Length: 268
Image (tube, rainbow, N blue to C red; front, side, top):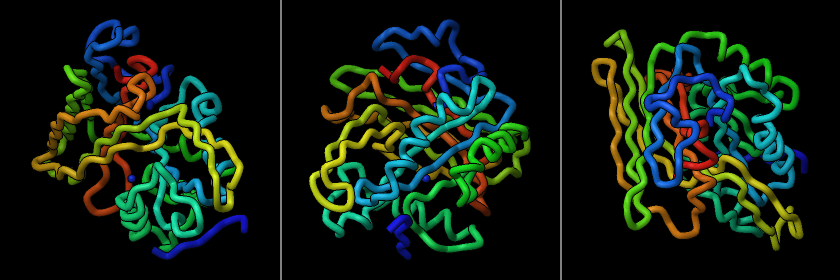
């Protein structure tokens, strides 16, 4: 089948955002990465995918290619969230998490059609069914709007494989309602699928979400998230990026997003 339905949440290195610390783009290994969002709204692109889905590899490849396709002027924060409801078909996706199933379902509560499937794209919190032709235009529309919130994000490596994540969201209007999320993604993941619809295929994943934190509600226009985590040995620090975004309190609309992608190739 081409699309499987199941009923059932970086910026580019060339991104034009302000840096909190000077020369951060040349951050050496082991140094703190600190970034902040700019006045334009970055497009959060969420792809819901699965290694067990034969229709997903082209969508994975499209997400991976956004860095080159969008161009230097585009502001994009890509995330690939692997769902678990394909695991029963013959192949257990090592990147899948049940909380990503829940995230997909939560986004769909605010869409005209409440059907979860893979591959499924959301751009700025809105489902984009014609992603094969409409992704660039959707990204441009979002980038053309002024963001109502600002986000500061930092990742500080510590001893013993620890990583301190700090995210602050603020809105000039204290009445702005929203929820702050933070995620860690990993790129350049290679997976050999042994069973299921993609049996025998070698798949390549970028921006695959490893850790999902939040939400933290904005109170009087502000929200903060602090978390120290122990990085698993299987995660490659040089391929990790940290993402922060704010979603409206009463809809799936994304108010702003930012990532550590412009600091270096990874967060460490």
